[in-house]
Image (tube, rainbow, N blue to C red; front, side):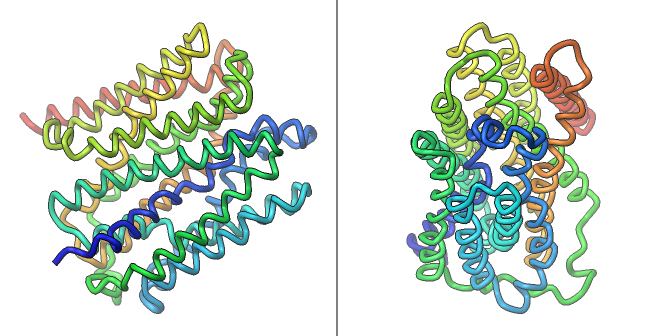
Length: 381
């Protein structure tokens, strides 16, 4: 029997805040001005540093859920993230802000993987595939709303943007009220039970690269727009919000597209994203740049649910718990290393650092499109 509508809605509401660490992406230029002596990499780590500390609770997640259950772990993570996320509202000390972001990550590591695992435990078959697509779409919608609100709050001050983390208390209340402990979430009792097939490890590696690329675009977009004079802080935040609306549309249509293209859904995502980055790089005006950025997030958002759905196929309940944590670890590691990787590669190229990063991203995306298309063709022969 399928869960009640209130339970389904409450589980899906968790997906709207899995990317809440990125809600402050649009204030990077303001943080650079507020802390002029702080290096760019450290400023960008204000957005991504939470992903470092999240590794701690992500690695502990299988043991924690085995001992306490999924529901208490999720609720605790949401409340901890709310408290830590609000601290920068009240301080302008850069060290305190960074420490609060590390604390935020501990909470994110507790609840974020279960946006996927709760769906996997509660639903089966094509409905599961469709809801996983919705999960990606709702994550994009949540990010869009948060970034849109950030664009309004930044008119007050960059401190005000951090009030957004108070919304995590509402999600914690929904989970506490309507989400029961999943009965299919079998505890992990042996290493063998929790081991993953080789194919899943390959998909985890591909997930890391996939999210490293999208972080490169998202982190550099505010600086790219500022350098090209494509708008003010509100324009940048609204562009990031519109990008997530594109991701929402992709998530809602993933199930339909996957039934048609199957494995080539991944190739389409990489190839379309490479083309959109090229248009963004060549954009002569703000309208073209905004359109390219939105299309990038739309077409690229087909890759995420494909990787998640394919990775979960054929696994038992204990393996699903472990894989969900590892998938989240892959995305989090990519976010943590993104400033280092792209600020390093950005030094190599004929143009500015930001423009060079877009060139590298475009080339890598094109290579992935060719590799996945060739692999599929060979497999079908």
